[in-house]
Structure formats: C-alpha cells, structure tokens
Length: 212
View 1 (cartoon, helix red, strand yellow):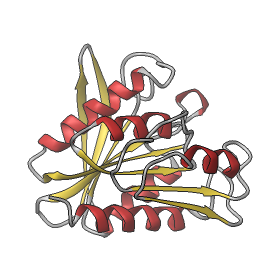
View 2 (tube, helix red, strand yellow):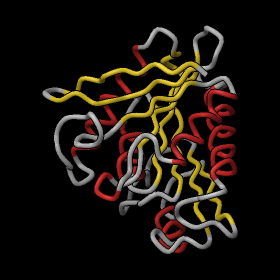
View 3 (cartoon, one colour):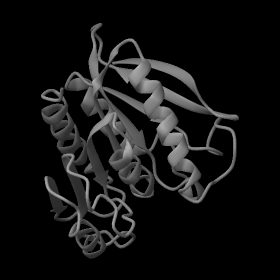
View 4 (cartoon, helix red, strand yellow):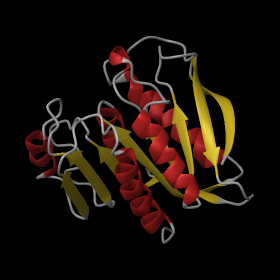
C-alpha cells in the first residue's frame, strides 16, 4: 500500500487527509471514508476506518481517509454533522480529480457518526456510485429515494447505535440495499474489524468495477 499524505481545501479551511493506494500504478476505483464522532475521539486513524482502507487496497481500490474540521490538523470546529457534509463533498472532489482514480468508479462509506455525513452526501452526489455504512447513525428518510447500491452493517451487541435503530432507519431506504446484523459484535468492532472491512471492500469492488 502506498500512502499519500495530503491537504484538502474546503473553502476557507484545509482538511488533513491521507490517500491510500494499491502498490502498483493504475487508475483505481476510490472510496471516501468518513470517521466516527469528532467529539468522542473519532478520527481518520480509527480502527474500523484503517481496516477498511487496508482491505480496499488489497482488493485493488484506493481509499481517501480525512479528518473532519477541528480534528487533528484539520482547521475549523465541529459542525454538528452538517458542516462535515461539506468536508465530505470536498474529499469527493479531491478524489475524483486525482490522476490515479477512475472518476466513474467512486464510493463513500461512513462509520458511526460518519453515517450522518456519508449517507446523505453519497445520495446527493452524482460522482458516488455506491454507499456503505458501518454501525451508522441514520437520519430519518435518508436514501429513501436513492437507487444506488447500498450496504449497511452493524453489530447485534451494539449499545450505542442499536441494531434495532439501524433496521428501522434502513427500512425505508430504496432498493438495492444489503442490510446485515453481525452476531457478537458491538459498536466498536474490536477484534472484528477485518470482518467488517472485508464485507465493505467486497461490496465496493464488486459494484465499482462494473460502474460506468
């Protein structure tokens, strides 16, 4: 895996980011990864975010991890999940313009709080061809009319974003969608990161490699 540390410009602020690429040169599918809650220690080096990034690069896809405003070396301050959507849009813009990314094969994923950001941004972006959420916080009505492929996974033992809430939030999402509740897994996926990452990477590679 090749790691390219970079800065993304988002209007008046800059965002710390890292583009993870497969070892061989090419024109890859790419996925923007949105991290957990900034006020509770979430950042682009979260265990789930890193695991997904590694799984994607093993499967020949790139990932763009970035810190939301006010996290790490990113400028600005917490935006309640609203301004962070602007951050994700800036990350998507950076990704599709990168010379090693195929702009027709781009996805977005959010973990936990990242779901508040990734799901609506993915649904509203013409650049995004596939959307995934890992233990995501799901806002009412999100993706109700979105016919892009969707993967939502969560843990059966999650007491922060319970699977019942995830199932309720995905019930109105348009098809196609895959919703999986994983037995024995809590919100943090400790020790189960690879399982989550493999599911997410397999989904994106399968969908994005056939995107046009």
